[in-house]
Structure formats: structure tokens, C-alpha cells
Image (cartoon, rainbow, N blue to C red; front, side, top):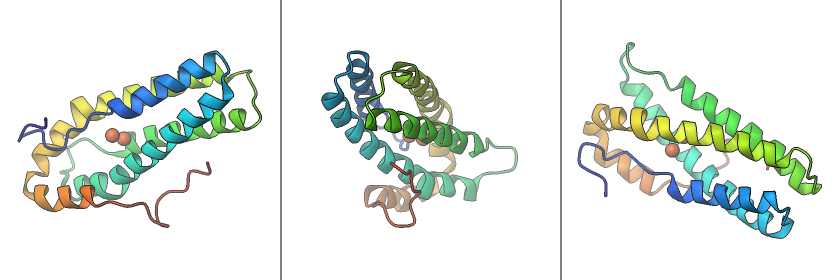
Length: 155
Ligand SMILES: [Fe+2]
Ligand SMILES: [Fe+2]
């Protein structure tokens, strides 16, 4: 349950669980199961990141004072996550075992670190900074849909 002061804080449990399943299947090279989990993981993450990049981060940047934390770091994390996903996607397509587990480890590290940063630093602060925009922003996030303007992942 979201508290009033932390209304923006979202947990990433579902997405992290899917990634854990991917890692388990990658370790035993069950390509069929891996592809299923990886597709679901990408679909959920694509939507989630687009909500952040198209609604949440811009709303924050519009209110942010010069001394407040920048979103650049968060965008950089997203870039690294997508880049790693592209590499993994290529390996799964050709069912190449070499390097697969290592890439998943890399993805886990960068994604869990990013999620912690959002859950413990960025989102609590943004909840406070954007409290006046709460209704409008909540509606936008709830009704968000991907569009042609959304970032192309190439996967
Ligand atoms: Fe994010
Ligand atoms: Fe997030």
C-alpha cells in the first residue's frame, strides 16, 4: 500500500521476479522457457520504463530546482539496461550459450541497482516534490499507453 507521502513509490517486484526466472532458465539453457519469460519481462519493462521516461521523469524535471538530483543518471541506467537486453536477445535468437549467463548477471546488477535508487531515493523525493500534481500525474500514469513516440528498443 502506498502511503500518502510516498504516493509515487512503486515496487519492481513483478519485473524482478521475471528476471529471476530468466536467469534460472538461462543457467539450464531451457530455450523455450527462457524465451517465454524473457518476452514477458521485456513487455512489462518496456511499458514501465516508457511510463517513467514519458510521464514521470519529465514531470519531475519540470519542477526540479537546480540543486535537486538530476534524472540523467536514471536515463543512463535505462540505456544500459536496454543495451544489455539487446545483447541477450541476440544470443537467445541464435541459442548461443557462451556469454549468456554473464550477460544476465550484468543485467541483474544494473537493474536491481537502478530499482533501489528509484525506490529509496528518487521516488520518495519526487513524491514530495510533485505532490501538487498528484491527481493529474496519477491519472496519466494509470491511463498510459505505448505509442509510436515511445523509445524503440530494437527487440
Ligand atoms: Fe526506471
Ligand atoms: Fe521504476
